Length: 155
Image (cartoon, rainbow, N blue to C red):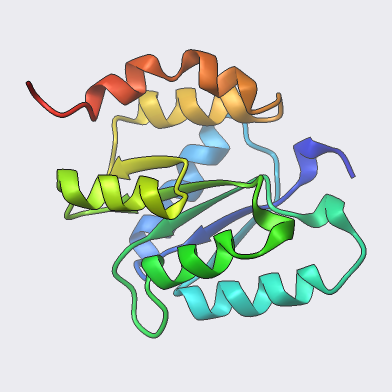
């Protein structure tokens, strides 16, 4: 399976957010399978099953997670996800409706690759996805300054 077919995971308890993200990803040309979960526990169960199979091509291309969810929060999901050797290289994007600078710093310290306020401008999310799919992740690293500048702490 090629990187272009690796699944994208969306973990959010809001059906509206899931629908919006699916539409954005589809609109910007993501043809990867999109797998959704309404909280971290379902995603963990799925990923545990995935980790027990020898098919590493099924490892997600990237994962979007909310912070505030019932049962297993985005923080708990992130801690579990980053503790799994198979998923350490998978890009993890955290989104929340209630961001602050401490939350963003905590997310980055927890291993989140990108932190967005719900919702960043579609163009920025599209640029991030376009720059990282299906090409390698190094493309995003070199093109991320405009996106990161939006989240820079005011001086």
